[in-house]
Image (cartoon, rainbow, N blue to C red; front, side):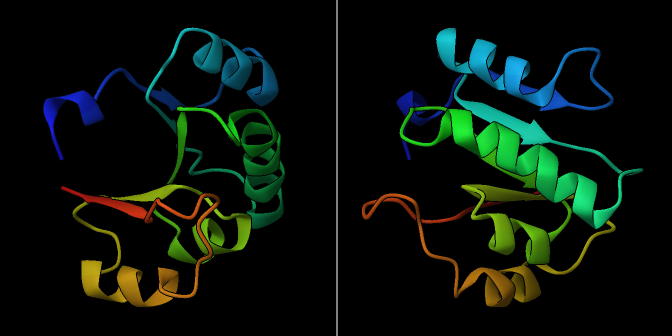
Length: 114
């Protein structure tokens, strides 16, 4: 990775606008990463929000990152996964995402762990 691989990183939590509108704005202004961080939503609601975002970000330079949930990130084919200190171990997340099919042939899932 080089410095050019990074850029503005936008995190969505309890937004006032629709997920689609936020994703459209992020793509329009070349936001590099868009993370969905919704701790109080059900799995179904997270997948619905993820689908709205992916419909917009697919085929663009904006990468969709899902917070915490390797299982849902794999299901929705997110570009990456954000893991915090209290989330599952990085090795376990990699196992869960190993079967993920990338949306472009030259990309690999991004797993961010802090």
